[in-house]
Length: 371
Image (cartoon, rainbow, N blue to C red; front, side, top):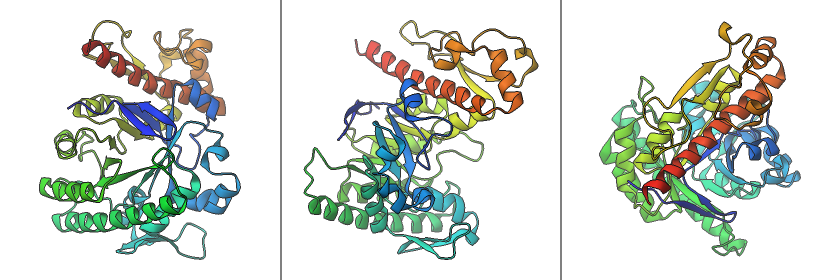
């Protein structure tokens, strides 16, 4: 299914699809805003759950909000914290608990509990100056029981209603017209149950949002993309709404997600892989109608391999990033083996440029097909 070709925001209309690196605590590790822009990155995703702890809301606000704090002029999407509740609290109750009021947790080293309610979630994202806000949701794993999924859907719908009401209150209070209000996305839960996905999607559509996200863990137990369920959600959501494949960032999954009708992707994997020595490379140039996206179109380069010790070649002949334009693979392996902090920056630049080039190739292929 064809996805919308742009995301309308106060920052202007951003062409879709788009990949957002995770800047969880207000930073893509080892890179500054100029590095990101040079990589072709136009938007990042930050995390409300983590930012309210480090550096803390009062600090973010004292520094002028997220854009000012990070020196970033591009789009900022703030995730709500629903996934963090799943990944931390659902996996280990010692980190906190969930109830119908919200998420209650105690950060490491803190002497008091923190509470993240739907209302506070929206208030924080507004105060941070986010461009796209995401509602608080009760995230689950696809393999969770039906009883857990039913509870998640019911709670997600209630929280989405409260988020929307608080959002509308703040928009009215601040006298923001449609050109100046941040966008609000709802998150559709339901695990692997089609009827629950349908129930959640229909309820959120009735509440009304600017876009929607695929909620829950997007991979099966073997790490494969849940193609059928992601595709089903696109069928449930009218095609003019943008869909965010939350947590999807493997290169092949981005391409497949786009083909399913998703326009927004985010994941920490490309930057994490870079730091650990797994680099992304195309196997062919962006030529012909496929724009180099057919067959085995990408490969991994493992920098620790001994065959790279004396290589004076760039990581990829088809990459125009700062790293490939100035440094050899052999030198980069040396930095990696030395565990030098320069490695983190140069490797991350490369993998992010690969992701932005992937997005560019998708755009070019779509344009060529459309004539």
